[in-house]
Image 1 (spheres, one colour):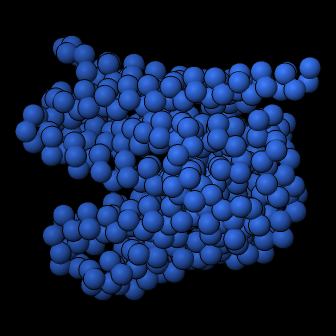
Image 2 (cartoon, rainbow, N blue to C red; image 1 turned 180 degrees about the vertical axis):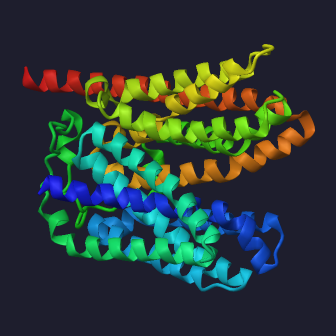
Image 3 (cartoon, helix red, strand yellow; image 1 turned 45 degrees about the horizontal axis):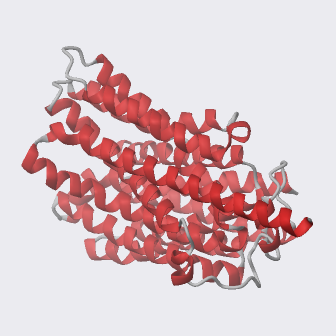
Length: 417
C-alpha cells in the first residue's frame, strides 16, 4: 500500500514539474502571436507566483479539512484546467485570467504533497521526488519545442501537458482511499522523534487535526530562521538559473553557446544531485545535507568568481554550485516535522512554500536592477551573500533545536527519577 501510493506520488511530482518551464520555453513565439511585448512574460509569472503564495499560506487550513489526497487531486485538476485554458487563449488577458487557477493549484499541491512525504516517507524519497520534479521540468521544453517545430503550435503544447495533468487528476481521485489508510507511523524506518510523538495527529491526511493559525506558526521559535534560509536558497537558485549565462558571456567572455550549455548544467546538476543524494540521505541526515549543500554552493560561487585567465574553473564552479544546491530544498522540507513537530508541519511547510516562491520571484529582478548600476560582475557576490545567509540561518536553527532537545531530555530524566 505504501509502495503503491509512493509510486503515484512519484508520478505526481513528474507531472508537477511539467508546467513550470512551459511559459519560458514558449514565450518567444507566444508573445509574437499575441501581439504583446516580450516583457509581458513577467506579468504572467507574477500572477502565477501570487496565486502560489496565497494558496501556500492557506494550505494548512484546507489540507486539515479535506485531506492531502483530495487537496492534491483538486489542485492538479485546477492546473490541468488552467493549462487547457492557456491552449485556447488567443489574447493576453485570457492568459492572465487562466494564470490565476494555475498559481492557486500549484501552491496548494506543492505544500500538501511536500508535507505528506515529510511525515510519512524517508529522506531518500524526498530527494528522489524532487529529482523527479526536475525530470518533469526538463521534459516540458522538449514538448514545447516539438509542438512548435512540427507545426502544432505553442497552444497544443499546453493542451498536451494539460491532458497529462487531467489523467493524473483521475489517477489521484481513484487513489484517494489509499491516502486515508496510512497510519500515523512513518514507514521506511523514519520513526517520529521523541519530542513530537505526542503531537503526531490523527493521520496523514490531517483531517480533524487542530488548525494552526498563521500568526501562531510564525511565533514558533526557529520558524523565522528557516523561512529566511529557505528564502535565501530559492533566491540564489532562481538568480543563478536566470543570470548565470549572461554573467559568463558579458563578464567572463565565454561563448554564448558554451555559456548556455553550462547554465543548463546548473539545473541538471540539481536534478542529478537530488537523485544521488537519495542514496545516502537517510544515513547522514537532513542537517548535514543542508550544511554540506550550502558549503558546496559557496565553493562553487568562489570558483565562479576567481579572476583567472581561463574560464574552466568558473564553468566547473557553476556545476559544483548546482550539485551543492540539490539536497537543500528537500532536506529543509523533510526536516520540518522533526524541527517543529508533526502537528505544526503543514502550517510551517505552507509558509515555507510562500517564502520559496517569494524568493524565486523577487530575487532575479532585484539582481537585474542592481546589475544595471554595478555591472554583471557582482553576480558571484550576490550569490555569496545569499549562500552565507542561508547557511547562517540554518545553523542557528540547528543550535536552537539542539538546545530544545537537551532541555526536553533533562525534563524527561527528572520525571523518570
